[in-house]
Length: 148
Length: 148
Length: 96
Length: 96
Image (cartoon, rainbow over all chains, first blue to last red):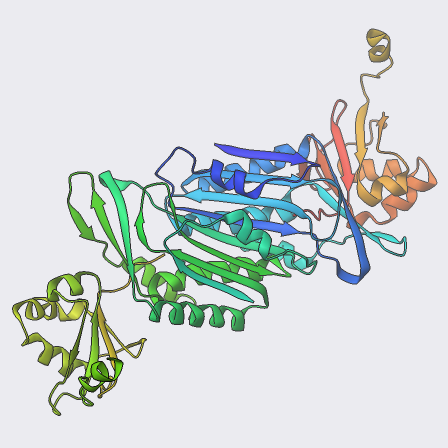
């Protein structure tokens, strides 16, 4: 039912969206969140590191949690790793359900939890050659915590 | 900034999504909701009627309200009218922002308000030739009301 | 011809539009009407329109399920109506 | 050769992985260690690892900012560790 992928390559939003309703007529809504790389403060690139093995486990756990909370007909989480340029996609979350509220809530839940519950780390590379690890934000913890 | 369209033709989710970040590097997230036609109870088609003129006005008002509540970098609402078959898309809402929470909340707001605040009416056509107008649901009013 | 069409519009007339099952019961998508001066609001207009035909009567018999708009803005029963207005009657909306 | 490689793994060893700036400060992505029996939990392992090099010391000096996982599950400082475990140290995650 669920698609979970960690990959360096970009992904195809249209194909992933279409896959959730292809050949079926019981899907009423597909909510999605596409995270993109912003070019704040002269950012030249983001470099994403992860913990192979644990990442897939953590994402599967988060997806299973969402499937337990909402009646989903399908669900997709794709997270890129490696070097990502400003304007490029980083993460795609899709949640499909018979009803829009389940799809919308599950999508928001998935991206909130993914931000705090999956082992990814972002390093920012700047045009001047400087580099720094992105610090975790308290607002992300708060967003995840609100789901209880 | 905002794209609002009422049309009989299908729409291209990928092209509409890409348009919100094309040539810019300040967009951190794009939330979307795609509403599809389900084939409940032997449904053969949905026929969507609207109030030309007022529809565009109402959608523009809802989009303006969302833009006033959240710092959006862009926003798209496309609603189909006419005859729609099971599995086909009906409505697409996209909200783009620097930050995910604004995009996610604005997207949910737009679809909730659109359900109760724009003059569209759905008629269901069944395989046995019967036809009936879809009744408004109290849960939709409640969903819209929660935004205050 | 345009001038001729225009001259046939009475200055005290208003355009009334019907949608969805209201349109089907009334049997018209729109009509131009000139209600008497006693008709000053949406509620009064609904009562007056009810008397125009069996179809109107049947549609407006479901009055509580009917919503209205004046000049393309949703409104309540006590909203004033006047000559030149575009008034619409329809069921609760079901888009999205 | 595989058997030879395997024979060099001590039965009381555990695999320790480092990520992001913890990896950079330690100077290693992973290492196989055999802490003494007194090391029974994550907190104890962090203290013991700190003594292995200047890099380890610098990394674990930021102990409060370090998160841990045992066998690929997030855990707290009092989580037990034992031979055969896969233990990881890293900063708070920043994906999405």
